[in-house]
Image 1 (cartoon, helix red, strand yellow):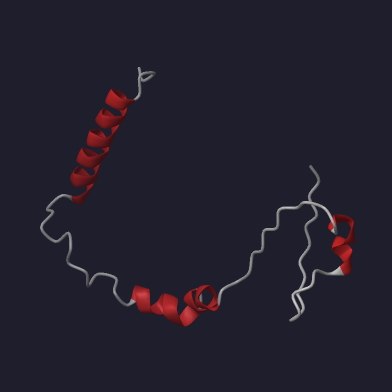
Image 2 (cartoon, one colour):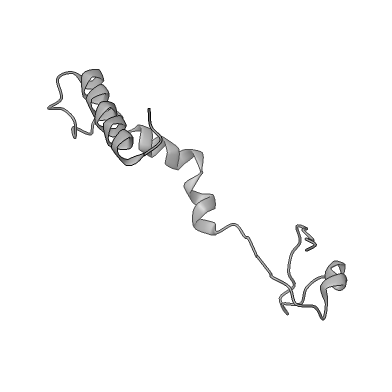
Length: 90
């Protein structure tokens, strides 16, 4: 199998560029990747600032007195579950 990869703009008529001529008339698999407008917007600096504005304001875990101990307990439970699931665990 041979792969041809290039970054190009597909013309409005939908025709592939001539640089793909080697593949014309052959059975091929075409994968098209393009940047969606929403993804471009989501990475703007302004929107990242909105997320940071929430820092310290979300009270979802306020009832946890010892956050480190809580995390350790969760990790121990996950590790125990993994040992039971994984037959190769020591």
